[in-house]
Image 1: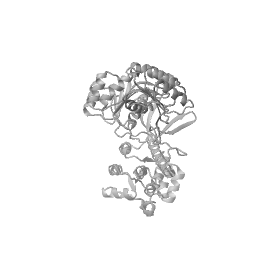
Image 2: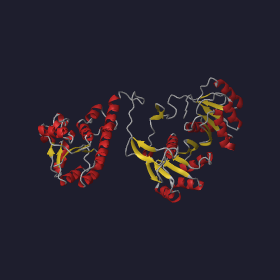
Image 3: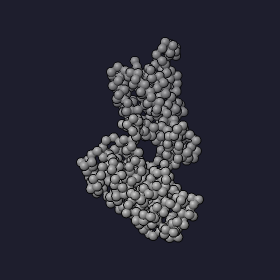
Image 4: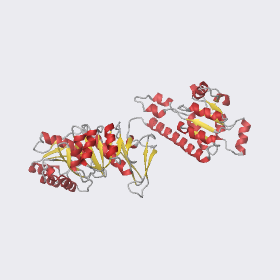
Length: 507
């Protein structure tokens, strides 16, 4: 008779699975609460203590850690191991069903106490899983209730073949790996530190992508939560998101979340080509699009408010080809409109925006990690460096432009009028070239606009070029050894010049 050991914390669908095993003629061995639940539901089960001839001790901390259990699991199907089992009166165990105490869920609770977290560190369960997974050539290990049906189907067909046992073993090892990674990170964290000495990543592939940036590159999307959707949200309509879609949506979403007022951000190739804020997204969208309607073709759009029918009408009026729209939510009417008129446009709902605290990039031979740029720190102290003070209208545009420029690739320049960009120049090695690009995009709209720069101007040529097309005020970090020369140029040109003291490179 085949024998199974069951010891689970998550008891979802366990009774039905156990009944299926009994119908197939299996003997069930279970511990503690698992045995109690099965008996209460009329499923015959042998207690672990009956097999080990040892009671559970230390409040249930020691139950299955015994040669009668682990010898039965680890024994190989070879004469020497069979002889050892016979000599000790131990029967083989052919199936282990186990999942672990909810350590990750416990530490995720606000204010979780260390003592409570330590109590959720599973010992016996991890040992059961690793033992069974190691011996996958003979033993089947199940750590996920979602696999119960497939395992029963295979048992009814004969027995899980080695391919299935190996896949289940890999899943069990991944389960214990993630568990131990979480414990090590938690126990080793004596203080909140974004940049610890060691970083362990445990990620699950949640989507295989058609290709990467180019068709000859393989790509996939990974997440810490195996049940996560793209960007932590839900794809409501449209084709699966591509590698480039995901990058652009992430850039657009972070930019939109930087604004407290309703805002729309249009992104193409990882850099905004239009940003605007208004009373509602439907009013902000035309202003954002007007910044650079040519570049907006084939773009993605981020909205920091739920998308309504009014916004959908604005998109329809623009007759713009859009790859994807990301927002906290979409009204039923808006979803119906997109399904009818732009069925290929992906809609991504992200109800709880959670910008990352840590950013990582792969480089040759290692990784770079940094705290994410969440805008100016509280210590930032702006000052007017020019003789002329900005007007009230210039101040509003400068504040808007300063937020927008932080999301443009360096060297980054934004021309803004009111609460909308009118010209953007970014991703260029020369700052004055970025100014000239923003001026070219703005055209006549540069007259009366303000300019924001993500880093200081090393020479006065940048603000001189801006003044030449009609810019009236400039905001930049300052900090150049030639700041005084730049200030003198601003005063000569009649510009208002504001220093923020904070740089916002985005490479």
